[in-house]
Amino acid sequence: MGIERGGLKSFRTSNWSVPPKLCDSCKLTSAALFCRSDSAFLCINCDSRIHSANKLSSRHDRVWMCEVCEQAPASVTCKADAAALCVTCDSDIHSANPLARRHERVPVEPFYDSAESVVKSSTAAAAAAASFNFV
Figure 1 (cartoon, rainbow, N blue to C red):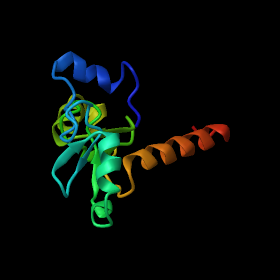
Figure 2: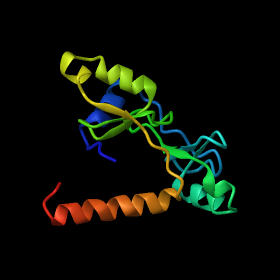
Figure 3: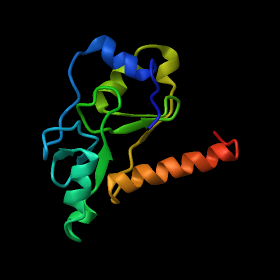
Figure 4: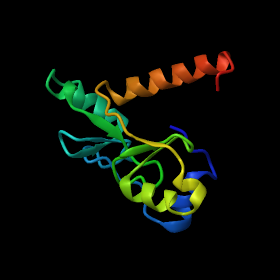
């Protein structure tokens, strides 16, 4: 999403030394999303495999992982930081100072398409916006 090197990601590395949560399915790759229906943390490849298996599983709602701690599902998106944050990281970051407290945050919207297609469409939209100097 929107965290750059030295941005909110530095908040994570300065306060924790916990590695990113692994995918519950393959146990090899860092989880990128959380499936609320399955209560499972999944990498993009496993999400595509699992949620394309049948029509019922394709309707599961998923959310991205917190971009700071990489341990919990994101619950809000901070518009100022362009970052998806879990409840704990949102509280820690936005209670740090009066300016951060004023950041507008909105609840994350679950997605139903494969994470891979969501990433591709987001990348395409960002490229199109950049070509028109909207970014």
